[in-house]
Amino acid sequence: MAGRLQGKVAIITGAGSGIGRAAAQLFAREGAGVAVADWDEKGGKQTAASIGRNALFVKADVSSSADARRIVDHTVKKFGKLDILYNNAGIVRYGTAADCSEEDWDKVMGVNLRGAWLCSKYAIPEMMKAGGGSVIMTSSIAGQVAFGNIAAYCASKGGLIQLARSIALDYASKKVRANVICPGVIRTGMTQDLLKDKKAMQPLLKSTIIGRLGEPEDIANAALYLASDESSFVTGSVIAVDGGWTVQ
Ligand code: NAP
Image (cartoon, rainbow, N blue to C red; front, side, top):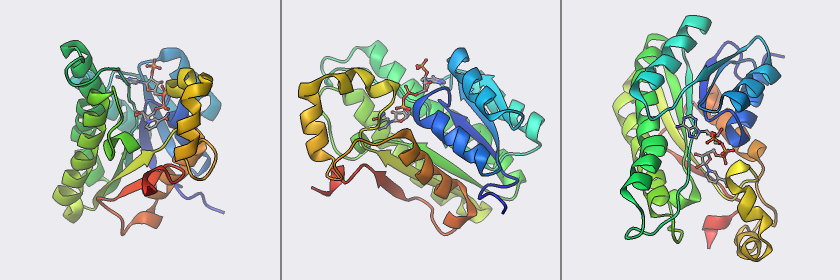
């Protein structure tokens, strides 16, 4: 049976670990050629090696215009086209609006929002050449509700939702769709310290009404749907994959 992404080509940023790695492996199992983009060379190469011939690793900092362009160029050079861009790379820095340093603000905005914009900027023309495509963003529940002491992160993740809606509106006629996934608390490198803290875990589990934490595969499965033609009538949507966190 043909895979759900048979013949498609995808770029996944931040695919050197966590959610991005799970998505890269799933997309490849479903038949896609996958460009694994990450600034972490070791993790990125491991992901690509776990996939094999259908993967390309591109070492890149998504907040750099030259790197974002290089990710797209190398992908098209290897696979001949581009159908899917999964903007997933992200970082967090702590601080309220008054405490956050300008450096941390710029860093978070640079990776989480500017990076997604830059990759989209260079990917969309290639998708149009391919007859259409799918842009996916990993936002967060922090893009929809506020969390204490991570003001820059919340702002960047909220911005991603509006960036996706703008792309959806501007490129619908060109068959380029854009959608957003808002994960809840997912077991990855980003949350490993938090998840070791028993006191911090209590409210996290309480708010996750499904009664368990999320795994990277929970998000990868949603990304697969948005990447595939099964979601051809879905654009500008914001999908919570949060174990029910945002229902109350
Ligand atoms: P992760 O395991 O830390 O994965 C993020 C990957 O992105 C890492 O390999 C990281 O490399 C890489 N990266 C960071 N900045 C980059 C840049 N400028 N250019 C290229 N690669 C870069 O964390 P994750 O949980 O899978 O995070 C994936 C996305 O999910 C992020 O956007 C995050 O905000 C979002 N998210 C996560 C959760 C959660 O609970 N885990 C919840 C909501 C949303 P380094 O490790 O070397 O920095």
